[in-house]
Image: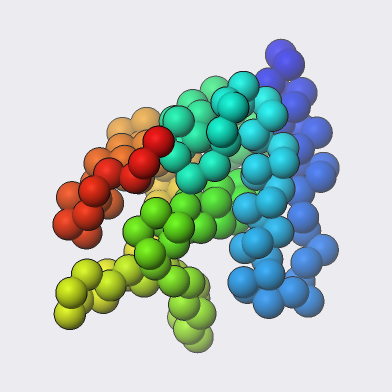
Length: 155
């Protein structure tokens, strides 16, 4: 019950009036919100760009799926928050960069002559829609390093 109540409280606090902010500013606000609000409840000493934090957010989505999928606006807010956090962790861990285009925003990671386009918001949306079979933890810890030819992010 405590987690369900916390999820409803968090919904009331989500940054939704940031429409005048640039996409990059909105991402930074979303990341700060996730760190400030989910970090303490996670019980992790070092909540941030690491596998343990991704595992916590993955389990949060599982536990709170009914609340997260309550309506389109709520789902969109969680996709925005967790997508911002995931994307920023990709930027940090894999030396990527946010790119804003007319068709949307994504993260680009260069590997040699290739540019890998990653969609953290779509990844979170799929995780919410499809459940644990589309794990954020597996994506961050296993799939990305294999696809990018890089080491697994440090703990």
